[in-house]
Length: 531
Image 1: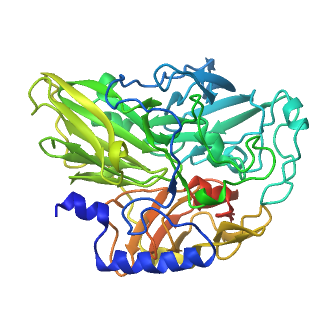
Image 2 (image 1 turned 90 degrees about the vertical axis):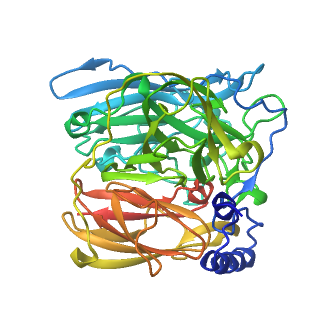
């Protein structure tokens, strides 16, 4: 049995025991049988498409357009984005209705400089309220995208035809901009260069809104990164990976309890664990082909799936394999070499891939060893002529402050488990569903805390405002893919992990939650405050 087979089957004693415990917990509250209880694939169930699917590697890879500021001044760059319904050419021969930032999926890329303020005004022309969260942004709470800080539609006639928003958290106060359908988000971006992303974050309805298209990438750059002279321009490839399913008419297929997204939240019982699509999209294109020079490239990869975990590798393997230079929170201290790389939903990795060792016309495939059939493949690279690039990966990339448990002023424990929410199967933190009124923790700015996180199933846990460092998993140290600053940790079934967080930046109320979006919508979220 190969190493890849072992990874996919998850055959090891700790994983096997964890799977049994998790299965017992889940079945006790009626959670349907899950894929990936062995710790290797995903918590969720496959939603099959209702129309024939395209053959992989027949459509070209594309990069979303970079958004230009509408104006700039000495202090900031200003952008405008309209959230709108549109049609996208995703599957051949049919148009797919989407919700898109500026009417496209993914949304436009925004590029910013460290410590230069980015101001984004969103106009909501969709039929439902929205919330915009800049994922990994070190952001004042007023612009963080708190789940009930709504941007209401410019035209609310559709809302008036449906029942009021009840949701699992009750009928929240109308705290968004209710006057004209606009909201302005201010991002100081006093943080390290990194790949951020922005997406809808409305309480109880994040999953279907992101599934319909509300996601885009945001790159922050700084002088430290520039000094490394990393591959850039056409040799820097932002890659957003998502899985989706399609109805017979080519529309996006999703098992919402209420398709209006204005009434009762959540998904039908078979998909409470998470929704897994059967079409792999890269920047909105199914299984695309990218033509690359025989040179070094920078691949900035985001797992933007609702619930699907990825285990990525290249075949044939380039010389030096995958050289990781960064993660969720930016550059690593020094490069790491991997033969494969695991990414839970919302996680990112920054890789240098050297295509110069391949003969022209070599096909190099990016595989996902956590998938089956076509979902085991992501995209393909066709290598061209060898080209000089003059780039060598340096031994030192960045200076990173190392956090230690001894710095902690308090240790907190949070348990992520299944449970009942409004007499339905749901997902809880410490036995409680999300409520805007409950505060799970209050942290002092300038302090370090250790959080112990315990899981029943797979839970990619994301914490707003500040990144963290992984201290341990079980009785061991950090895992193979835990290096550097993170904003999301991939908790495995029946696993306990410890992370260290240094709270700084801004006072206010923020959230932490599971980034399996179906879990988040079904109440696996909690508040913390900073002061």
